[in-house]
Length: 308
Image 1 (cartoon, rainbow, N blue to C red):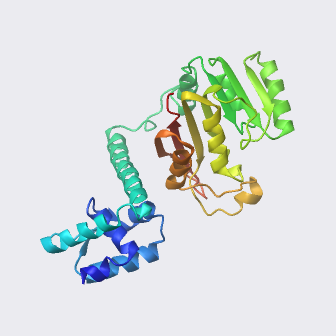
Image 2 (cartoon, rainbow, N blue to C red; image 1 turned 90 degrees about the vertical axis):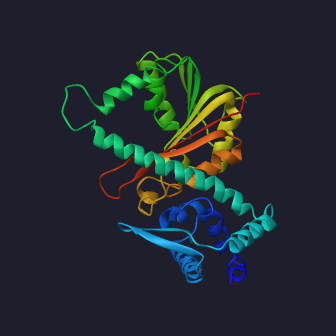
Image 3 (cartoon, rainbow, N blue to C red; image 1 turned 180 degrees about the vertical axis):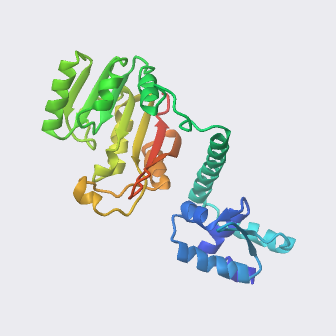
């Protein structure tokens, strides 16, 4: 029976994950980048075969290998995985995605205990706001060269330039570049420069900046992987990329209202963009969810260009 179950690649991927961790259907969707119906149908077969069991926790169902699975079947499962090792790249991607899902689970637990320990916004205190803290944090910017890619008017860069040695704002709108340049001149920011250009073909030399930022710009790019690769190109060894963008959503009107090319990205997709471009120490995390519909969620991704 087990031989028949492991003959399907999806079921084999599920069993490989269950050898490491008990997971919910939602977590399995995130790890496998696969629809719920397909996963659920394969889980049903594994459960019927007595290989997997499930438990309820509130509204969630968690799945794991059956605790009393005979040793001979466990050995057979390990042998099946060893046989396809190197022939199924999906297994390596699943392992990487699993680690991120488990990190996300840990962050969620940490956030929960932080909330019950004391809420930042529970009590009013004059001058104690996220806006004020953001202004303070921006003043901590070191004297480095920064590229704000898809900057628009460059409001973020206007703040960063007060401490950075040089800030380049790149945007493909002549009007945005004109407006930003006037604003920089008005504020006496000689180290803030605007360039007309595309984030998929950045008009800056190789290895010329310490920090590259793509803030709500990537979902406007026809080829986001190319934009991330350009960020990698212009970064000095040891430099860092920060990406703020929307999590994948289904608000189709965004294409018309905001000229969005993509309806956000999944955490796995953002991670893949950075990893494929060559970045190391890649991290992706949810940093905000809007309370009002359509409840846009913002992701923060970061990666480092390896030192020479």
